[in-house]
Every structure is written in structure tokens, then in C-alpha cells.
Image (tube, rainbow, N blue to C red; front, side, top):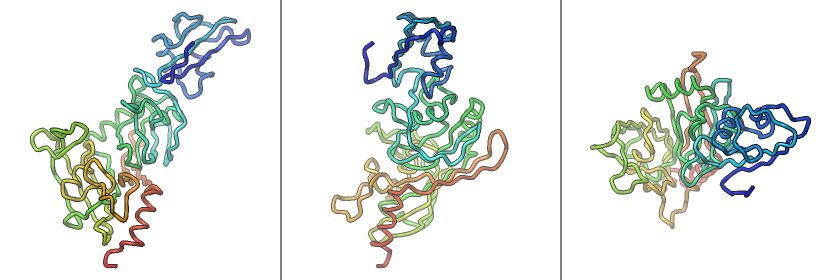
Length: 318
């Protein structure tokens, strides 16, 4: 079998001791991080062959059978389980709360076929719901360079209930951000619809004609003499790029965000290592137990070090 860089491949030869076992059961034991339902789908789609033939998941193996496995890393209905580093803040049999590192894409997409958070989640939780698509367990997302707290569903019922809770604005989230310039007031609220940018399709924008209702609140925590500030930001809605778009619209873009004007000039004394936005807290009612759940994720080391440098070198009034 040819090996493709866009697929994961395995070959097995069945021994006498292994005969009589169902094909899908054998593969679950042999391929770490793969669930039986996912493998069954791959068998039916012809990604897994026995003696170069398509068989059923329940096929009983015989001594001498040759099993060929060649599964695309990112094909419809299959996402590869891969070891990916992320922090686990809480887990039970219904859900998990994790902290995503900066630079990690949440789910497979064009240009990011694997090595995403979803690949890592499947490695730790092989039976996540929603594996017919490419976002198993995902009920909300963060941008690639945004770090911080995320909620993951571990059953179909919880995925449905959490998705409804987000839709009905029953889950509270707050962020921390370094802003390139201070907003006009120490506290404020932005109510402005967000939609696709009329020209630059990769961007979102305040769009009064076609945008969706969006609300962001901010509070400046600390100001620095180089014009930057550290702020707490809360969102009442969850639109794509919402914080980045809204804060840029009042002249206070997230530091390091080149897409929305947060990249400082090349001569700036402090150059952010990335888009300095962090999802810090998450509060919700547990969809099964009914308990009030509140979690927080400390800001990432790169953001902490950047803030410390600002505090040492650019304290307001120094």
C-alpha cells in the first residue's frame, strides 16, 4: 500500500490466536484513540480493507487475513486522534473544561488538516459526540491566537444542551486583553452589529445593514505610558471576531492583532508576541447536575511576561 502524507496507514496480518474476532473490535484494540463507531464508518467507506476487499464492521477475522488501513487525516466523517498539549481544568463524564494554548487551531479546516485541538480532544476522549463532522465535542470556539478557557461536550445530549445554552446567552464568559491604545473611557459598552467585511472576506466588521446584534463591555484595569492598557472584556453575544472588531471600532484594537490594526509600528519598544487576547473565566449551569460551575484560566506565560515588561518599563506617569 502506498503511504500518503495526507493519511494515516497501518497493515495487520491476523494470527491463529486472533481469528474469530470482529474486525471493528480488533481495530479498536489495535489503533489507539479510535472509537468503534468511527472505525465502523471508515470500514463501510472503504478506507479499511480485508484481503483488498470491502467487508462489514462485524466481519469475523480468519488466520492469514491481511488488513489494510489507509484513512485520510481529514476526510468527511473522520478526524485523526493525535496527542496535543492543552490544560484540563475540569472533567467529568458529561463535559470537560480546558485551557487552549495560543497558536492552536480549534478544529480542522482548510490549511489545518490535523494537529488541532479537536485532534487532541479525540486522543483523550475517543467517543466524543458529533464525529460525523469535523467538530466533535465543540460547542464554541476561540480564534487560533486567542488563548484560554473552553467548554467541551462529551455526550450528544450535553452537546445539544450546551449549544442551546450558548444560543440563549446563558453562559457567561470574560476575557483579558492588552489593547494597543486605551479606549476613550475606563468603562464602556459597545452595541454594534457585526457582519462580514464588504471587501476583505477574511475579516468581520461593524455592519449596520447586514450585521448580527452584538454587545461587548470593557473595563480598563491598568494604563501604561506607551499608550497601551490592560483590560477586562465581557461579551453578551458570541459573534466571530467580536472583541477584536468591537475594540478596534473604538480605536483600541487588541495588541498584536495585525488583522484589525493592533500591530504596533516597527519602531515600537514593545512588540506583542501574538494577538494578546485571553478567555479568562467561564460560568454556567451544569446541564446534567444543575450545579453552578465557575472556572478560570490564568493568562498564558507569553502574555504574562509581556504585561510584566509593560509594568516595569511603562508604568503610567513614570
